[in-house]
Structures are given as structure tokens and as C-alpha cells.
Image (cartoon, rainbow, N blue to C red; front, side, top):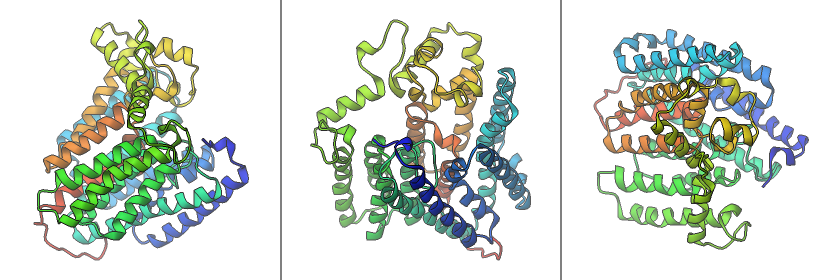
Length: 446
């Protein structure tokens, strides 16, 4: 597999020159709406990370300040009192996050950079909750998201031409981590399903294949397992109305085909370790289990975990013993996870009971940063969003996706603004597209 270190600096520079041009075009296209400009910025985080730490820090400060300005301008802050559970959970999360960070001696820049992610999540909700009852705004927001998702597909095509497949760079979204490529296509598919209200046409299926291509050029194994599940749930479980036979047949054929192609196109999922290797379901299942949870012999008497799933299980075992230290409750601070990483394996085994930094799921990261107390307030914060979904079936699916992503994957849905924005938008949008009771109120400035 190619890494960012295997590709020449000139090729990467060429790719990001194209990303920069697309960024400027996107800003120009949506320049007349402040919220849309903010959304565009969140979808080009990878560009600012590529430009260096100083630029990245300035980016995070400006996005928070701009978000606050938009919340004040749209009078969205008036909704704080109308969502007491969400406001309380956010306040509690903030107190725990800030106090544990100060106690562990984290610097202000690091603290602000990390806290800003969760703060924007709250601001996004207030602004969208204020503006989404307007159908004209919803349609324009739908078009914006569709455009930005399409940009990621196009940039993935550009990337494979310039740099070839590699894990770190994900369109304009990420420069230093490929996990985006497993999560973003799932959320993008759910958005598309809501936008079309489950009524796909031919170009939508091509669009879905484009989402899978994002995972392909980033070597993402998880996407080939999760996407067929998500498609199946939304096409067969969520839809209560009668689905046309043609659509049922297409879905029934596409779901197993995606999994089959994923196995053959990902060198790590077939015995031959090559592109278009043979399909062996038994091998795939064994590999997935060992990758996520390790083998029985991998678990020592110290209960050191293997893989993201194994590490989470190890941490749960420690919690159940109730023999917890001060660090177990309030964590080790942001610096340990987000500055000094990667940490050597021996240190991780002794201090955190996991075998490598790659085993750090979102759950593990929360524990390291601010302990089990932080895990509790994080889950409470997320629950305060998810309970607002009125459609039970969609709520169950989004809860399932969050739990998989937080406990068994990276926890990026909470921490990365583009994913957070999509996640919050779908929570609110799902309540509106079935109500059909919102009057068409056209206003000039949306």
C-alpha cells in the first residue's frame, strides 16, 4: 500500500493545487450565504492541514468565530433555552473537557483546537434548527451538500491519476488520516437517500458507486462491510411504503455485489494480497475478526487488547473490575493522544492496555483524554442529539452507526466538522421530510 511518504512532494503539491482551485471556486459559487461558506470551509480541512500547523490553527479559530457570528446573526442562540437536555449535556461535557485538560497541563492552543470541534457541533445544531423549517433553505442546503460530496468523488479520481491509491489523503477532507474514507461515504449515502426520499434513479446509483470509489482509493476495508448493510437497512427496513419491484431487484443485486467487489478489489481482503484476488468468504471473516479483535492467544493475563475492538473490550474489562485509578477517571490529557503520538507499543501496553496507537477507537481516545468521566459525558452529549430523531427506524440506524464508529472505529463523527455537519443535518432533516406539514415559506435571505 502506498503511504504519503511513498509519493513525491511534487505530485502531492500538484494535487493540492487542484484542491485549492476547487476550494476557491466553491467559495465563489456560494459566496452570498455565510453558512454555506462555513460549510465549504469544513469540507476543505485537508487543504489547511496540508498548509501547515499555523494555518490549521488559524483555520480552527476563524471557523469557531465565524460560527458564533452566524449563530448571533441568525438569532439561533435564542434556541438554547428550548433544548434544555442538549444544552445541559453540552455544558456538562464542556466542564469535564476543560477541567480535565487544565488538570493534565494541556496547552491553550491544543485545548482550543480540540474543543472547537465539539463546540462547532453545538453551533451547527442551533443554526440548522433555526433555519431548516424553511423549505427553500433546505433545498439550497441539499444542493450544497450534493455538490460538496460530488467534489470528493471527483477529487478521488484526480488523486488516483496523480498519486495512485494511498490511505492518508481523502479528497479535500483529510491530509493525514484515511479513516474519513470509510465514514464519509456512509453518511453521504444516507444524505442522498433522504434527499431523494428513497427514490433513486440511474444517476444516483452511479453516485453511490462514486462513494465506494472513495473507499477504494484509500484502501478502506470497513466500507465494503458497512455500505451494503447501510444500503440494505435504508432500502428495506426504513421504507414503510411499497417499494417498486425494479428498485427492490436493483438493491437486492447491488448489496451483495458491493461486498463481492470490495473483497476482490482490496488486497488485504483476499488470500492473494492483490487487486482482483479470489473471493473467499471464510478468509474474509477470519481476517476481519483477527484484525478487529485479535486471536485468543493475543490476550494476555494483563488483558492487553488487539485491534480497535479488542482494545475497547480490554477497557470495558478494566471498568468492570472497578479497580480504577485517578487517571482512569480523568484521563491523561490531550497531549498524550494528539501531540506525542505515535507512542511506543510498550508504553501503550503498560499504561493504556492496548497494543498500538492504531488500536485507539473513539472510545479509547475519549478515555485517554479525559477518562471514563469523559466517556460518560461524551455519550450523554451524543444521546442528546440522537433522541431528537422522530423516526424510530432511522434513529436506531444512526445510533448503530455511531456506536460502531465510536467503539470500534475512530470516533471521527464527533470530532471532524464536515462529518459532524452531515450528521446533525440528517438528524434534523429526517424529522422534516416525513412531516410534510411545514408550509412553504419563501424568504429572500436564506
